[in-house]
Length: 168
Image (cartoon, rainbow, N blue to C red; front, side):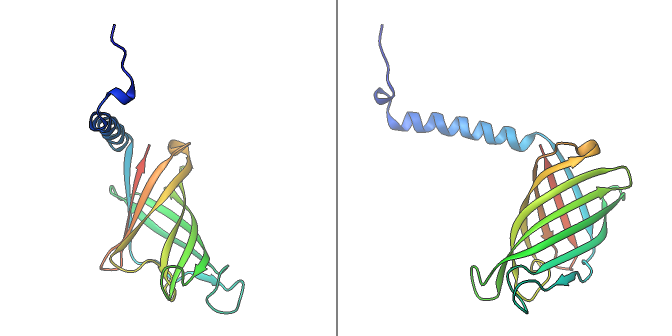
């Protein structure tokens, strides 16, 4: 009987096997689950609470409430709280902001909950136009109870928004 050890396999073979396993695993992740898309026009001016130092600084909060809709036209109530956690983080006038959001579908209690961080222009309330960011789905209720996954939020060139939820 021949004994094999990892050291007896050529490193390329081991790397190739690992790559096949990884690609198969990732392909399985991307093909499972549900995709939900929510769109809405430009967001209203948020309520800005100037916490911390006066002016644009760590601790400032922006609170939003607005309606969106699903692809079939159902109303989605949206509530966001963003807190500035860093100023001039990657360049001058670029802020890091943590956020929590709830997307409530109709009045049925079906919700998707988000958390995450994004980079924002220091003088703006939202992402730059024609940009996007990805955040985590951290839970839900109703038909989305226990939801996980991720959402890509896209700020379209015309000022409108598209949020594509990838639910596991």
